[in-house]
Image (cartoon, rainbow, N blue to C red; front, side):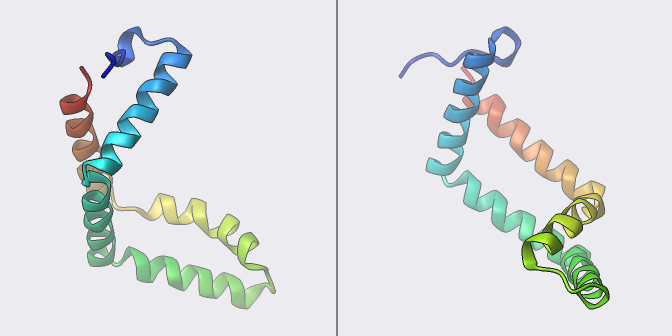
Length: 103
């Protein structure tokens, strides 16, 4: 396996190579699935899913919109509603994965 450049000394192409290699390792290691399950649990427990679902329903009632348009309208709101503790937990988990997997 070739050495992966570190983020501090990577060019744009090297940074893309690093990101791709990390993404592959994340999936192949099963860590992606583990983090996805954890994220879904945390969001569900926080009430985020119900909140976003309610916003989407209300938006759809007010306007006769197509699904893609509704997603475009609701997505930024949904991202803003993610609880900070959930964001921090996911960021910490990803940072730990990167630290373990960058040579």
